[in-house]
Image (cartoon, rainbow, N blue to C red; front, side):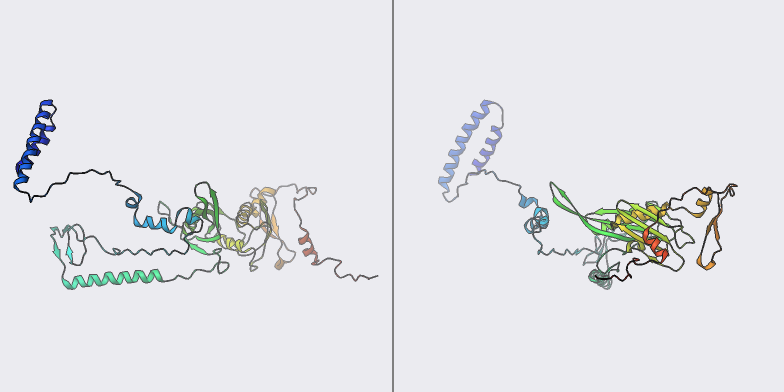
Length: 404
């Protein structure tokens, strides 16, 4: 049998040749080897026969061995894909992943070995370190500290942080987001505070993904000293959208002029699309009698006393744009005095009929007075006229009618 095996090996080597004589010789040798093997089998009939080798084509790759177990379960439970977008698999609980290696270092184990370059420095005190082992007490102390640290992380994760109240208990409007993140050059914005004005879910219908949901938020920032701005943020989740809007708003700041650091310089009527705001200057201590979004914006700007009436659409983005446009375009007393080349005076109730000069022209008062035929472009509202005349109700409301 051993001779036949050696001959077969020689057969394989001879077949690999290129000449025809080698092939013919190989056939003759193979016949002689087969006879020798038959003779050996007759002498030793107990030897088993070697089965012929068969080749079968198999498929080496499929989605079962290409995808991970987590991806296969996602396809079954419809957590993602078309099934998840249509609302399937709502009651399936997501598995909470726990990182068992959290807090450990490479090289640390139960044996307590110290491996230079992994869990201990290679050179210490100018001496090349070798592999050593910790004491049993030191190893137990390290394991106990790791267990306590993991318990502390679990306790913090399970602790519920009370949500700050905004305008209402459920909405995000009016909630403080803190200061914007530091800039790329190390600049900080600790004096600024960010407030949520609007947070809503928006949807976009696409051909591939269908109804795609996103979160859109409007955030305003301000330092309470005249500098404020606002921006929109949009992302797939709420936290990212709020962070993007907060960090973007700090790059679009307005500087708002304030009269005596508490109110506006004059009455303003501002309009943006279908939203109209009527702002009125008020005395010290009046407060903010406005829409709740305007109150939040005024606190960020630093305005303490003002009245505002919203007419038309109450869209929060339109209200914000109309407010910043009106306040940025207001005319200060000094600007008005330089424009008219006249003194600007103000009448206050505590001073009676005596005027108070609040602005004087830099180049002096012009010698010729202002023409009397100039008609001021002042729009009067009927509600304001009635309030000034003391007519709160209709003049016909108290008339007694005779019934015939």
